[in-house]
Length: 126
Image (cartoon, rainbow, N blue to C red):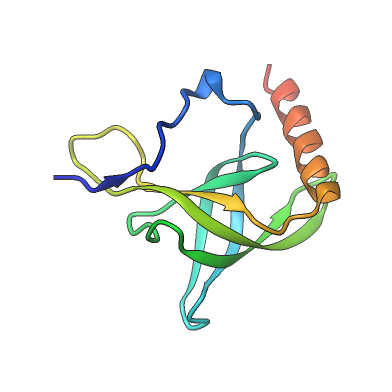
């Protein structure tokens, strides 16, 4: 049986308040400072991201995420994140396993840059 832990109902993609796009994640460093994970964010918004993982972190886990925002931003961002929901692998599910993360200490200027970049990506994909 799959282990799905979602503290609050997740909105459908068309009900989300923020646009999202895919982004490669350079490094995730867990609290114990020994484990490092490289991953793929299947979507990012100005407030957080979803990391695809067959072994998602437990709810309320905190860790540092390092990601490089592509052109035209060309900026490496390092911030503290928290796991706000997780979905484990299931053969019966078409949903990708992973974890939803919230940015905890990302400054407003960087959030705005991410939001502008996502808006640009969304317009280019039309």
